[in-house]
Image 1 (cartoon, rainbow, N blue to C red):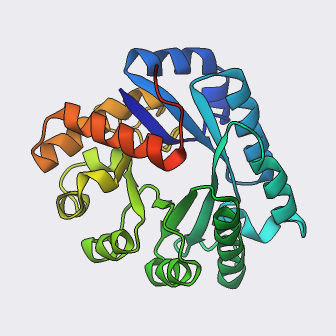
Image 2 (tube, rainbow, N blue to C red):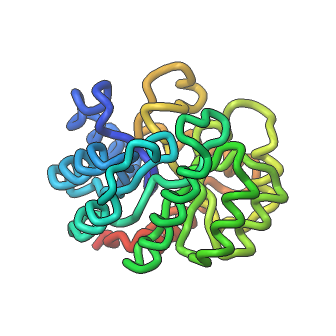
Length: 255
C-alpha cells in the first residue's frame, strides 16, 4: 500500500479523466492521495475533488510563486478553508529563489505567516523550497514547527540533516529515478522513517514514464528506486512511508 502525499489533480489533463486516474492509482496500490493547493482557487478545487473521492484529501495554501497576488485577507480565507473535514494540511507554502516570480520579502512574509497559522491550527505544513535553503531554515527555526515536510526534496545532504534535526520530514518525487544524482546520497543519509513519497503530478513523471503525463499510479516506480538505493525490500519502503504519511497527515487507517 502506498500514499501519494503531493498531487495536483485539478490540472485539466488529470481532472478531465479523474475517475480513471483514481482507479489506476488504486490498481497500483496507491490507496490515498493528497491534492495540494497552491493558491486560494486551487485550494478550493482541491477540497471539491476530495469531496468526490474517498481516497483523496486536500491541502490549502499559497505557493511562493503566487505570494505577490494574495488578497489582504488570505490568512482568514485559509483558516476558513482549513476547517473542512477533508483538509489534512496547510500548503503548499515556502520560498522559490530560482524563479523569483514574487519578491523575496513577500515570499518570506507569506511563508512565515502560513507556517505560523499551521502551527496554530495544529495542521501539518507542506513546504516548497527551491534555491532558498538558508532562508527556509531560518524561518523553520524561528517558527519551530516540527510537523513540516519539505516536498520534492532536492537540496544536499547537509540541508537534509539540518531539516531532519529540526524534526521535519522529506518527500521525494520521480527525480530519484532520473539516474545518478545527489538525491542518492540524501536518501542514504536520512532514516527511512523521515521519508514520504509523492508524484507532484502532473509534473516530474518517473522513469520509465519520464516525459509523459504524471499521475499517482506512478508512485511504485519511486518506491522501487528508493528501495534499490537504500538496499531494502520495496515492501519496507511501502510500509514505512505509508505509516509515516498516515501519522503525519492524520489520515484514516484501512480497516
